[in-house]
Length: 255
Image 1: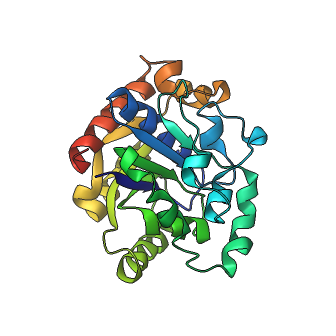
Image 2 (image 1 turned 45 degrees about the horizontal axis):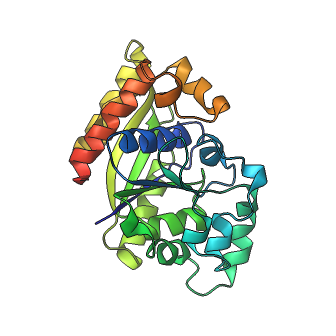
Image 3 (image 1 turned 45 degrees about the vertical axis):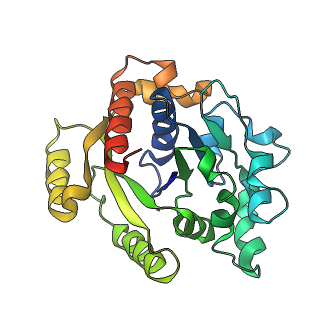
């Protein structure tokens, strides 16, 4: 059975999209069939996978609005070795477009139902906000992966996300669970990182993933080349960390 995982954090700049792209590539390298859904109007997951977000005939918005099927819009056969349901700035209209729609919070779930079994894992890159797109992702998902930067405000706003996860679980998606908390841009040499790390361990316990993603210039450079760091600089520290993350997620989710 396919596992659908939403990567979300309403705080921007925590490595959410970078983690979505590189986890997708790392899972694909381990022979898992992967679909990456770009639900962020910035379209960075699409761009980071080698897709020109400005040259899309159709996007995930068309799928949400029922104007195309997921199978029609998914881009297959990419050099990154995983499939992509692309998104772009058109998604900014989703909030208004879906407002008066039937089953507006379940549109993505219904759309993915027809293709999910083609994949071992579906990763959803959510926007950095708790809006209708994020609600759609959480309604469709089995689990939530939360990238978190080890900084002073790391836990600020996280309670709102966890409350939303619990509300979705209670109302429409009883299968939803936190699949893991991922520490990104991690530098254990700093006292701040160590302090925040302890807070995270105390707060999340087993939900905190063992894998950490270090600060690494190659990770930052890869998106400008339209490929994951696992292809751009496969022996870099960042690339190695994402491969370790993929193995941990495979164990954790029994993929």
